[in-house]
Structure formats: C-alpha cells, structure tokens
Length: 205
Image 1 (tube, helix red, strand yellow):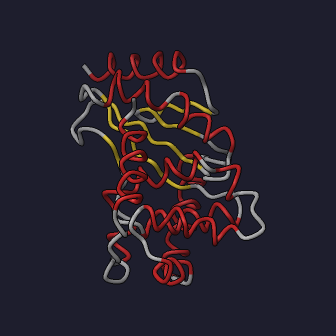
Image 2 (spheres, helix red, strand yellow):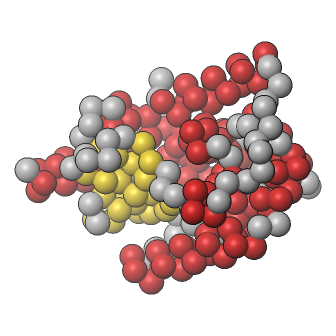
C-alpha cells in the first residue's frame, strides 16, 4: 500500500472518530506555495509531475503507478517526487487552491482523495460543496475553504507557476513529468517510468 493511500485511509479513519480541529485561519502565501514533495530532498533523482486535478489520466497515474514508484524508488531514498498543480479548468483551479490551503502535512492525503473521488466532485452540479467535504477530512473547515477560494493572491500565484511551467519547460498537457529534466508525457505504465528513472540514476552516479 502506497504512502498516499495510507494517509487517505488514516484521514478517513480519524474523521469517523473525531471532529476535525479547525485551522486558525489560512497560512501565509509563502507557506501555501511551498514545495509539496515526497522523499529524500537529497535524492539523486527528482520527479516533477505537472497535474490537473480534473484530468482522468492524472488520476490513473495516482491510482495505478505512483505507488510502485514510491515503493521502488522514493521509499528507498533513490528519488523524490514533487507535485506541481497545472489546472486546466476552473474546477481544477478550485481544487488546486484548496489543496494549497489544507495543512501541508495532509496535502498528499487530500490529493489522494481528490483523485479517488474525481468522477464525483469534478462532475457535480455543486463542486465546491463536494470539495468542502473532502477538505474538512483534511482539516480545513468550510469557512476556511471559502476564504481560500476568495484568495486572489493564491489564485495569481498558481496561475503564475503554471505560466512559468509553460514558458520554461513547454508544459501544455497533463500529466507531464520531468525526471531530472527529461520529459515523460501521459499516464505511462510503471515500466516507462522505471526506464527513465534508472537512466537518470545511472547518469547521476
């Protein structure tokens, strides 16, 4: 079982037992936009994923492939994984903003919930209501979700980061991965990532 899946299950378990403690307002913009990553910061290989939370292929990667990458590389200190939101529509932007507002230590658990329930909230007539339910499981009360979605500075920061990814790395679709700078596009099977990561490890020796 992957680390993210374990975190998702833990959040659901805690939510059943206890009311989620309210955050004391939103963190600073710098805190919200800080890197969200898994693994050793000093690992020789860095895997950056540009992802849109309404993207079905992104959900496929998180459900089917990321766990294998964690087990084979991240948990062994060989690689680290960085998630960078690249929202392709308004609902994905709302989910991205909320993801940045949830407590940092619950970010990946919340992302796991987003992809697990993607078909529900992404197609809902009231996606914000559905996102609020998931956010509360991750420790973000409804009032803070409203404040988060009204935060123009956060919106601008996510848009600016996406624009930088387009200009600097020619990112235009999701999921797109940079493995020590080498691009892998789409929800490829684990074997494709294994080939790219092994090649990056060999070069890094």
